[in-house]
Image (cartoon, rainbow, N blue to C red; front, side):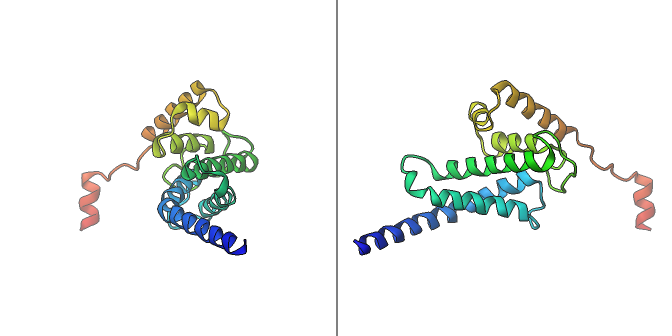
Length: 167
């Protein structure tokens, strides 16, 4: 009996290690986009990833028909949404803008953009995951895309300024 349990435990550990080897990089990138941290300095994203992977491992034996990546992504998104709600005063409010690529967006906008555009989650699935109407997810996604495409880029130096700097 013990040998069989040990063999099952070893098999479970190997399966999970293989899953982590294949999925952790992408999940970390998604978490880094969510937290809007710099890729090399992302402690909040790493914490979210660790918690999502720990939860997935705890549920591993109950996932036979479910994609473990979807399970981990759902937990990652739900955890981020819950933390953003509690730390920032609500889903659309942010006090401090982090320095990452999606820093111009609120936590809710980042969550929807990451789910819809980076992860390819359908509007209906994102809406169900977030407990929002599909039309609301679409509107937030459209607003976030507009914000990202209209974010001011620092102007290029004028030709005279560039020549003066080169001298």
